[in-house]
Length: 354
Image (tube, rainbow, N blue to C red; front, side, top):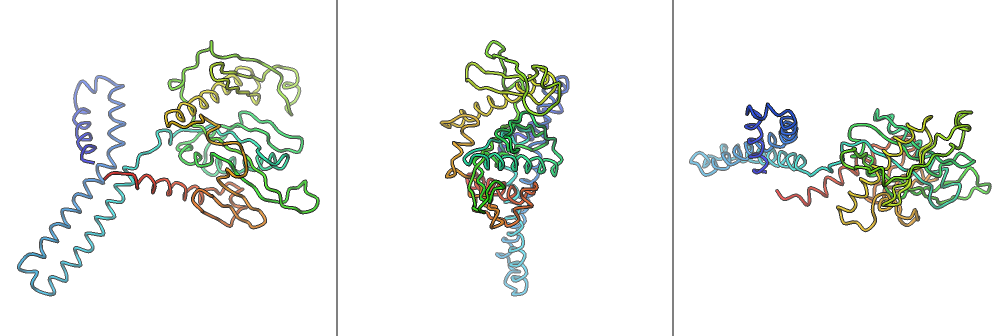
């Protein structure tokens, strides 16, 4: 922490230099670093002050006055209070020093796919799409449907959406994985409970400067959009399929009304997938990108279970169970996500050298 404090003082000095002010790009970069470090440095100084006051109070116990029982009792009470204050400030400082995911402030691309369970899995994927749509509305984020493949009964084979909002990735990243549902499907005539799955992948949106696409590496095909949409969709080849030749990644987009719009959206999805792949490789994971997040879709890989007969939602990573499933499916995810955020912070605090 002393290193952070020294760097903060160095930044304050450099920001006041004429050569820094003459370089707008450098000034912005240093100012951003300064503001990011400021809360931790302020907390560190407050903690140091609290430790000094605690040491002064402890020193009084060795003084002549401490032989007086009433005075000694008063000092001991003060030491207890100052020790608690110092411990509280230390914990707050540690939280500020917890390393953040560099993508936490990003918007995201979400990919939802039906898994094991046939038509019921597709219907569950539709329920998840609705849940995330309502959650985004609750957070006042902007959700846009980029690609959708539906079944005849209204289920979702695959849906790709963008969620634009401050800190979207810091919350939605916990949704990556296999989601399991246990319920009586609408298609079930004998009232039996079925178990099905859907997979969710959450990718931080990539900026163009992070993932440079060489057009020579892309094959772009056009085709006619499918599904409801009126005469325009049926008569024009506005849908776009982009194939990234080096990796074999394929992205389709058909929800916009023009080729240009669909192409832009497809390239946005491709960049995010490539960024996720790069991120996974940097972490030495065996499987890259989306596949590393969602696995095979098998029931045994579940991260969360939605049990409708028991009105239960269980997150298996932290052992949390809530009994308000209707609220969860209507976008009330904060209780679960708050617990996951706290769990992540606790894990990082345990690894933090202080």
